[in-house]
Structures are given as C-alpha cells and as structure tokens.
Length: 269
Image (cartoon, rainbow, N blue to C red; front, side, top):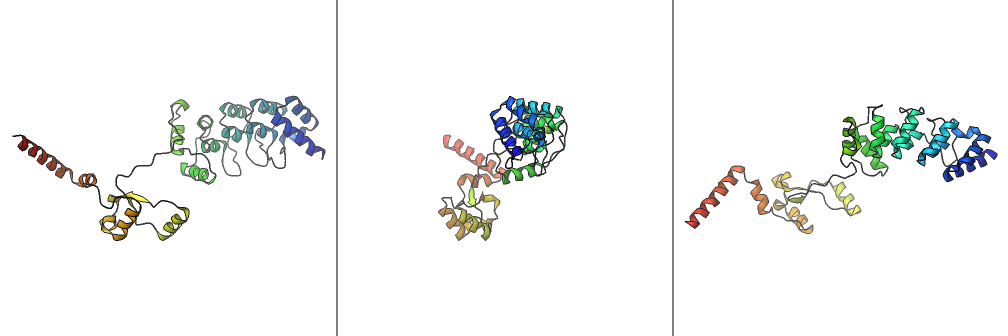
C-alpha cells in the first residue's frame, strides 16, 4: 500500500515538475526509478519525463541512476519517446547516456522507425548516422494508416535520409500529393459488384478514369448503360471536340493546320 502511495506521489510530482519532492520520494523508495509509475501508466519515471519532453527531469533521473533503456511495460523506451516528440537534443542526451538504438518495441519498431513514422526528420537524420537500414516505406504507410497517423510522404523522407539532406533543404514531407485532374473523365465500367455495393453503402462517388484508357467497346458513348451513368453523374457522354482533336495523329494535326493556313491565305488574296 505504501509503495502504491509513493508511486502516486511520484507521478503527481513528475507531472507538476516538483524536483525536490521527486528527489525526496526516490530517496525513500529508490526502487521506483526503474518501475512502472502506475498500473495504468506503463512507463518508468525516465520514460514519463521523455514522454513529457522534459529534458530537466530526464537529466535528473539519469543522474539518479535510471536505466536509459528501460521504458516500462509498454516497451516504448525513453529514446523512442524522444523520437516521437521530435526532440533531437533529447535524443542526443539519451544516446550519450547509453541508450541502445537497436532496441525494438512490442510493435517491432526501433527509435529510428518511430522518428520516421511521425515524420520527425531531425531525430531520424541524427539516428540514421548510426543505423542505416530502414523498413520499406510501404510498411510505414500501412502502419500509419492503421493507426490514424498524420500523413507523411515516407518515400521522400527516406530518400533524403539516405542522401543526408539537411532539414532546411528537404521538401514538404507532410503535403499530400495532388490528385491528377482527368482531362476526359468517365465512369469506370470495370467496377466489381462487390465494390459497387460497398460504395453505395458508404455513399461514395463512382470510380473515374480517362475515356481513352478504356477499350472502345467499354467507352460510355458506345454503351447504353454507360450513357445513362454519365448523364446521372453530370458527365459528358461524348468526347469533347478538343479531346477528339488531341487524338488526331501529329501528322494529321500538321496537315489540318496547313490547310487552315492556306484557307486564310486564300481568303485574304
């Protein structure tokens, strides 16, 4: 019971950053320095300080003798928290204090992985000097999607890590690629029934493709159902004249331009 009360006090003092009281608790119960700080907070005091992004408390716990590689039952080490918090100085301090950069969490990620997953380029670049092997960027995309992380262009980020590009010179890795505008959009008739039903349930728009990507027999102007779907969705049934002109061979375009030029000459003669 007494140990439980001491943990409660220690957690409260850490969150209130009361250094003298933290020291007092740990003098009485030094074993708490490398234990979970609460039943529902599976962090050591050092990991809690890193989670709070508090370098003063991190230094305090390191000086007292906290294990820099023990993050508690959650398996997220202080170094991993520093990477999640985008704190390169804290990352450097922890490495100098003996943090092992090869440790992986229960999710299978290293501190470098967490820096990349969160799009924190500076700590990632710092760690990349020590570990130069990273997962394929597709794995990061899937994990980020499953865990509702903010968008990060991992392909660009990892490319610049390998090039050792300075933080100030990297492009915006948080900007989503702009969707390419279709020149002559038509509803894709190759949509499966399963996708169609799911789309109706989710109230999603039909899939669109360029008209000229489809075989002629699947283009909407050549199919009754295609004409109806185009009209219902406010899309043109027939190909526009400009698109028809683009499909003319370069030689025919040249001849067409030549004929127009000749006609102009005749009209002015």
